[in-house]
Length: 416
Image 1 (cartoon, one colour):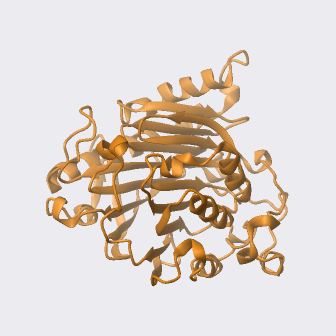
Image 2: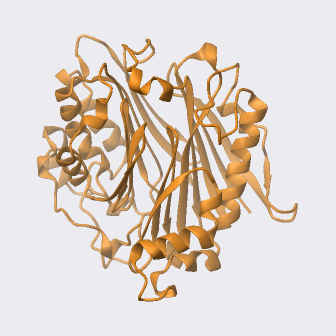
């Protein structure tokens, strides 16, 4: 993950479309603060997930590199690495990660990137490929430096309004079908809180048009996304992600491999194939691929605002075993145990002073969930003990939010 001085600059993305007009981007309050204004790098990511229906085996994966480069340029970032398996393509970006599945696109960007400006381009490209829009989910933590953001990210109101305009019934969303949107602010306004926007087409809860035979084995009925955002990292751990702590003769990928091993990141989900990148002079990004699931970690180690994030997808319910190397999560107890162990492993590596936990549940078929309340499984958890009862995190806030017929979210804040 890059620092403010290292960010790839693409200027103002005026080609983003009428939904992000020049007048709005240059209006007072939307101008970024100069880089010498004493602000730290904004580590927490903006998160975008878009779902589609397709009859084609490739679907979104048929997007060309030129298309993806254009999408990234709208968000003011670029592609650094690409790794693929049977199920999806995983890209490390200059400002976080991009995952492209046959039926969905997941994009995370940090700093002062303009993630939402890429939405019109994505819709345009997938329309050319014959895909049907299903839903969009956008979420982020409240910014520490909102005044540094570019339009439409200066406020959640601007972000929600921009998305409303994009999905107001243009051809890419099939105007004849009603659309349903919701925007939520979850958590204390004077502390860490979560902002999330969901927009669904009328077909969002109907069965998929067809499942291509080549990807049928990748489809699972229920999936949740676990996201751990950690702040004020242990300084000894943070030092592992400074380039000058490794021999100058080592190549960047060699440093990244050492950081992955030395920190313990390699052991979080051992069956993952890990692609990592070490930034100059500091910072780290990683994508892990295991079957049709991913994990990703991004680290900003500067003492003034140290931050690390961990995100992974977890399949559960009937037919959830997509890989023999992963546990079968067909009960609430199995899902809870696996999820808690992941959180403990991640928090145990970075030892933050506080962290925010979100679990987003996207049910594909309620009857095959095994009666599991995925987001409710952590509600009764009030303390998180690591190696001993002395080293404990206490939960200061928690909320469960139903964001749509098939989408719900758990948000909680934790601190020592």
